[in-house]
Length: 50
Length: 465
Image (spheres, rainbow over the protein chains, first blue to last red):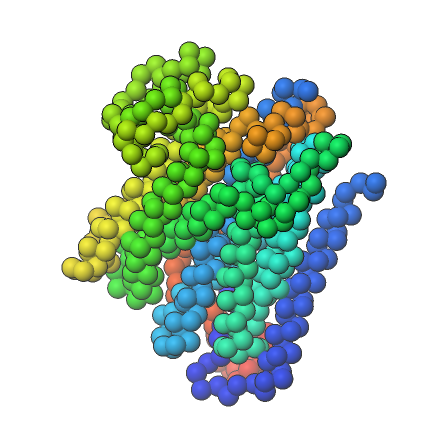
């Protein structure tokens, strides 16, 4: 867990370009949604077909 | 109907939902706490808030995961053990649960990744946005779940079809059913109280070992402030909710207070031994008139007793009666702890009183106890109905055998015991370590022996030490 959670930028570190930050924001959000959706789809497969 | 299958199905749902509610009641408050911590860090750049955020984020992630795992099970139970309920009520209640997944769970799942993995990648502003969205997501989740449960308590805005099923005729009335607003307030405040007690207990535990720990001192002060404000508010919300129960579910109120006769100036039973067969309390320790005053706001008011309802329409009295007293007892203790902490804050400082720190540690689990006791009052008090006045629990169960339900119940007991033990021990271990500034920084490289081939290298390009 220690290595996984990302701490905030160090003080004085120049910010990344806005487009890169927004791209990461979108990528992580979509990744999270897709992970939840994939898990849900796999669990749905456990239900018997009707 | 197999009465053993019914009893075992009820036990199974009670066990899994009591287990599940532990996690949302903690993460709802913790998500808001994280948002406050990050907001304070952004505003002040005080490293204590960052340290606390990173510490509680770990515990939030584990608790959130355990909440998801224990919550998914119940969807399957509704289909497997309560198929008649599902077939009858799903056109009304199904969309509420679906909205919870679509609007709340996906919001939380999407932005939790940014909270955990993206602070440097997205920068402080967008990271705070993600934390806020997760906190809002937990509250939206509470909104839909309490909406669904409130509809089962006081159903409105529906009609029966020719086939005996239920359909919604007024979605607004379904979503915001009569008891919903006060129940949502009561549950949200309970979640905040639960979190304040856990954060306070963890901080107090740390301060008993390291009295000068800045992060734990800050966290304890925040927890005590929350407790001092929210615990009295919860008393008011609970009182309003109780008065609504008198109007909307009088049999439940009669069971909560062990009132058998309908009369004016009902006494308040501090303790009693309700006997359902004899339709009386075998003994009771009571204060005259106080029951009517608490439940109706007037010591001379007439309050309906259980004998006004047919025996088959009465909830189990003793469970509801004692669960309610346990919940209220915990709530009064929380108010006392908050008042004591506020008084100490104005004098020597709350972190300097070792008796208070020990009391705070002891009170740490009481939020969970009160939440589970409160849900027992709500759910057992609604019996013998699963949808109050509409569908009896005995008529809602699936045509399954006791053997099948026993097997799955034993499976749940074993799996949950393992999951809960591992998860709880890991969370307790993290709490024991406490918030340490810089704990999330990458570990320093291992020292290399002087004269070795790599001793002069500043950094291994391969990343290995």
